[in-house]
Image (cartoon, rainbow, N blue to C red; front, side, top):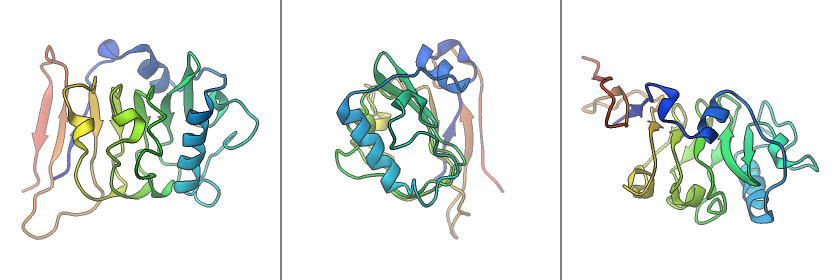
Length: 189
């Protein structure tokens, strides 16, 4: 089952998501555990061998100036690396748990495989926008991402793979805000 949920307007977005959507970033350094999690993410997703753009990564440049990283108030709040050639798997276990302030992730159109770790990004507790569509992921969506405790407004999980015989592929676009009146869901016939 493919699922894509899309936000209808930016009005409901927190400032970190609006900054991320407009490719703005704050400079600055982050605590050592957050930097270590970013370095592990870089290594696990083929930073040296796969990434198309990697300015600043794993260097003396402040983390807020790294390609695709948004820092606010001394913490990583956004990761935006769409169509950047990321390959490999997201680190399992608690490797990305230190990124607990991340509220927006866009890893769309890469080559990430494996499954989504349940404890990534601080167990998704602050996640507002999560787009990992068009990768090579398998398995279920972690319950921590869909729990009532998250602030999730936008979720995109479309898979590029064609459905297997007997399965259906759905494309869904809807707002997750109660006051919205937009939304659609379609299934190819």
